[in-house]
Image (cartoon, rainbow, N blue to C red; front, side):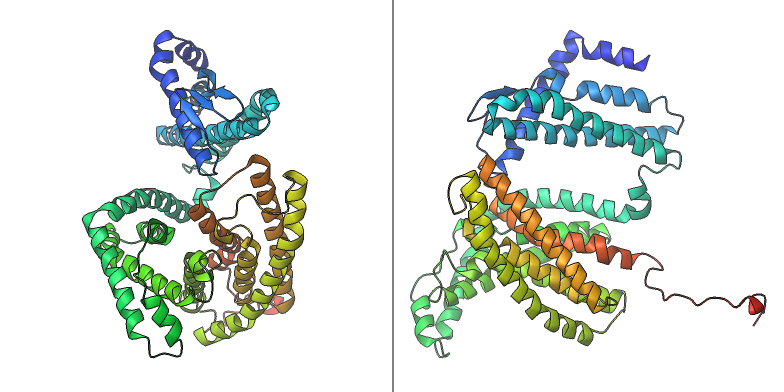
Length: 471
């Protein structure tokens, strides 16, 4: 009965004019924005997305409104509390929005490169994605709704879900606030002080062994351009504090009092290191200029790992952790640089020659793409090497599996970028490169160790003769 009523509503004239038409325009805008992060240049004309090949219109039936009504017709009669039904409908709507955005983005991405595949991707693959996703959501919700819990994921990891949700909100809001800050009077004032203080420090360091080089660097006026201030590390600071499980007044106090000092110190150190190395390496090849933010994030992750194992879990001392890191880091650096060299000289030319007819990457800002295996393999082996309780053989096994996974993901990424002419957002790409190994490490090794009782030693077998002995 509900399905019939909802279908009649979806076919009414007023619903199409008020809901469906506007949803189609919103879907077209969201799809255009999502693909712009991958470097795909599209234009929006109402509910139509104009690709370099053909225009693609997002019709009313592609907005997902009828699918949501079918989902609601399945949830509302379900024999659970109204609280569970409301949660199911709310999260079902959010899940449908993400699934439908993924579907439209995937279809338009492929069609922009292969126009003749529209029917296959729209009628076959697109519908499979939506039907499978929504059916899976309903089965997941129905299995656990009788326990008044939405998902088994939330039942065991509710704090993780809550932190990830707050992190996403904090990152999106922090990104917008950071752009406003850079153009404000306060942002320009702090930026001016960074430039002035960098020049002062360079001028005062002329007595060091690098006197000639530093004198040459200090003779030029330090000027922080927009690219120097667009690092996502400052936004990441806001997002991490926003998701930190503490009282809200503490979070806002840390953000309000710590944002400007973090912004100042982060860019001051960056400007000094770049000015001190530009005479050694040009800007295009300068390691500090291109990878300062990623190295800063890697150091923060390693520091957090030390705190987790040494202070939170008390599995080993800081001295032992430092010894493990100093042992594994050179091995990780050697493996990362060696495998990265092979990837740049064999894998990349082979893929680009087959796909684009060239031996070099079509998109590699500041060597971010070509040096991805080096950084990911170094970070993964370093994390595995500092994990307490792992024998040498298991560390070698996990390291080898991580190397294979990193190369596989890198191969798929290069193939996708060369096939569809993608140019992902540079800052988001660099952030993803560093966070991916840590996310896999957390899921495979770190999270199991954080479960209650997972670090307990195994108990010996009980002697049946003393089973009932009070002693």
